[in-house]
Image (cartoon, rainbow, N blue to C red; front, side):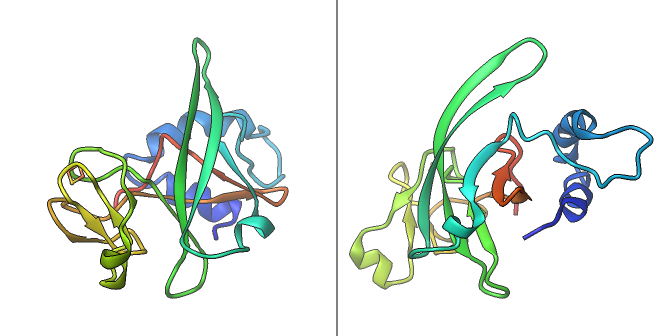
Length: 165
Ligand code: FES
C-alpha cells in the first residue's frame, strides 16, 4: 500500500504520470507546507480498506464512478480483481482487461483453477494466474494493475491510469 508521497512519486514516472499531473494541482494547496493530497472526485472509490482486507482472495470488486473534467462528465462502471501480493500481503488491484485484444477476463473453470489458472479470457483462451500473470494463450503480458491511494480509510484508484507490467 502506498502513502500519498509514494503514490505521487510513483505516478509521476513514465507516461502514466501525464494523466496524474492533470489532477494533482487541483488538490495542491499552493505555497503550503501541508502534505500533498489528490482530488479523489474523479477516482474510483473501492471502499474502506478494512473491508477490502476481509474475505476470500482473489475477489471481484465492482465500482461506479463519474469522471469529470472541465467540459465532460463520463459515467463508468465495471470491476477489478483484488488479491494479496505474494511478497508483502498488500492489496494487488488488477484490471480485468485482457492484454491480448482487450476482452474482459473471467474466472477460469474449476479444472483450470486446479492447474493454477485463475482467470480465463473467453475470446482466444488467454490464461492468467491469481496474480494476473499471463501463463497461457496469446496474452503478451500480465493484467495491468492499479496503484491504490488511501484517504480517510478509503481505497481509491485512477481507473483510466492502470500500470503496465
Ligand atoms: S482478447 Fe483475451 S486472449 Fe485474445
